[in-house]
Image 1 (cartoon, rainbow, N blue to C red):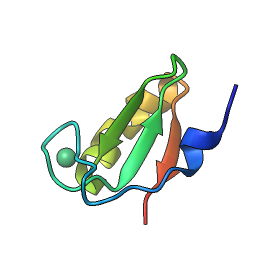
Image 2 (cartoon, protein in one colour):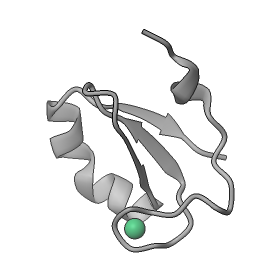
Image 3 (cartoon, protein in one colour):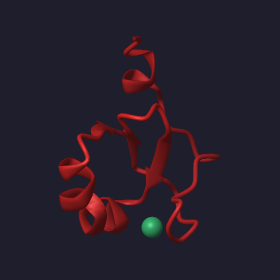
Image 4 (cartoon, rainbow, N blue to C red):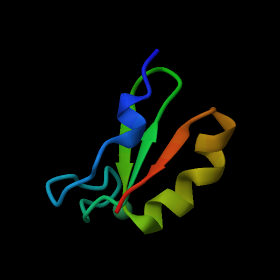
Length: 60
Ligand SMILES: [Zn+2]
């Protein structure tokens, strides 16, 4: 297990998986997958993602 992905820095090249806006939050799934969300979609999906045990890594 590594926590490297939790400290990743989001750049302008990282896009929200929901709408394509600039990503503000990286979400690390228990399965090892990663999702990127803008602030809007991070809030929208947060409850379900927390249920799944996902870790949120705030962007800049
Ligand atoms: Zn979005």
